[in-house]
Image (cartoon, rainbow, N blue to C red):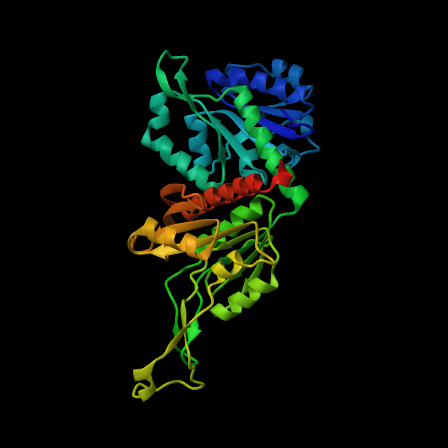
Amino acid sequence: MKIKNKKILIIIGGGISAYKSLDLIRLLKKNKNEVKVILTKSGKEFVTPLSITTLTNSKTFEDVFDKNSEAEIDHISLSRWADLIVVLPATANFMTKLSLGKAEDLATTVILASNKDILLVPAMNVRMWIHKATQRNVKTLKDYGYLFIGPEKGEMACGEYGEGKMSSPRQIFSFLDNYFNKKNIIKKRKLRALVTAGPTREYIDPVRYISNESSGKQGYEIAEALSRLGIETTLITGPTNLVSNKDIKTKKIITASEMFETVKKNLPVDIAVCAAAVTDFKPIYKSKSKLKKDNLRLKSFELQKNIDIVEFLSKNNKHRPKIVIGFAAETENLDKNALSKLKQKNCDIIIANDVSKKDSGFNSDYNRVSIIDNSGKIKVVKKNKKSFIANIIADIILDKILINDRSFN
């Protein structure tokens, strides 16, 4: 148990397991962390403000408009004060409010106004948890970037058994320890990432070009996910209609050669994610003027290969990133072709997606991928928002870099 000197804002929801929040507060305070608590109206049915104030040595917050806090706007000041916000128990009803973006009391208003990560600790009856409406809300909240721990399988207060039991205070504490440990490592090591995104264009003449259907959305989402972790992120993007976060250094290019040169200029980095759909070929000859339809040169249209940026990074002895990730856009034999590319390009992870699907991949907000590492381990992610998949990729990258770098141990 290493977590200490952190500021944790706990929101106590209305469920029987609300009493466990007191044990979590004890653990946090024992390890010299500051804790403030928002007690919801429903939560007040299970724990008292007095018990909370006694443990935290701090005021218990309950109302949006508090006459005793006139000098501060609590829903802003509390969220800015905290290093992390923890909601426990996160009930089905509370998660519904969050998924709809409601701000009807102090707890929901703080969350909507927050600029910090929010950890939800669900607890409810097994039928409530597996209900399609709850699962839809969970999916939405994960897409928004909310963190989750649990629920666990076990016997519930109602006497039924199944998934829905709240994670224990020690499990939550361990999650927080791991969360802040990663944050501290990122901050200490000043990790740098490079992400490529979007298509490239190879011009035949001033108005015609070879390209592909890539929208750049997956690459942009990965850059956002890495940046949110505190990693200094550079995004090198082909032509798209997307706008990146102001914290991300964005370099715009058009051709594969321009992308390659820009990648080289931004080395060294710790992490390279090559999500761009780089055009594999370019014309040997580019006309300086628009070609006419009857131009005979079109009959002998010659192409040459563009440089493979992923392979260049993976085999770069001077400036090889610790983690190199490539993408494999396939229409058949997804995992087989991706594994072949993984070995050929010498990268650490390859992410394969089936671009023949009309409801995901190119020009879609959704994707379905297989994440394959160099040990042959395959993680299949079913159809989901690209932002959700980006968060999974970011977590895998961080876990892998921590394992690979002995200096972190």
